[in-house]
Length: 318
Image (tube, rainbow, N blue to C red):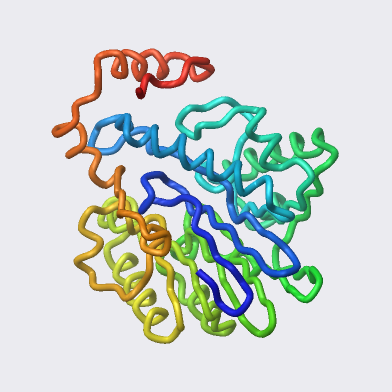
């Protein structure tokens, strides 16, 4: 997808079978890999990930590595495992230390500050991330909250910390990034959940991007971890954005619900931009287990992996 001379390439998200919101944006001046994370939900409907989800994670990681080799800048909007690449081995994130080094070496890393507007878990992960990046030496870590960088004729800027969903969310804060070239604006707004927050909505509308890539509200958590009225607010705000902006690309939490498409939201998906089929694997995990039962070898692997997270052998998928 292009807007002006900005090229936008979806890399991984729920419509492509995994938890992620990884995106590659390229201008004539700079190439940016947004949030190179991928993850699988450990449990959904009381079930572990299906083999097809692990295959999707493997493929997503392959694409992330391919585009990391091309990137000048890599972002970390916040420290959730589906938004950055950790340095430890995990098949649920399909990563290890070698993968981590390949993603971040020789990159400028624009990251969420770990000293302000950050919850305990993200501060802890961010501290580990900072120490590992310092060991790389070839990478340059910049905390980028409310900051701007000029790269040739391209501007890359980040919002102040905005809530991960509603105001006061226990999940903390995220950065929203905007790339500007020759007057065209592409905004990457991860995990704002709609947005639910009116402050986040006002921020997006104040910039009025030509292309908005945004995480939708977590419909699958409605009435449990997120109040129903907050979900409705997120949907209302998402519809307002779709009416007022040129292009909206919908991603992430909303697509974890198999009935999301009944909401009639006017937006593109990562899968539709790529011209591929919509693969909502997590949302349909219960159906996958019923229609395509995993092998005994796979179920044995899952059971053993839970006991030892440093398990070296990948899941038996082929």
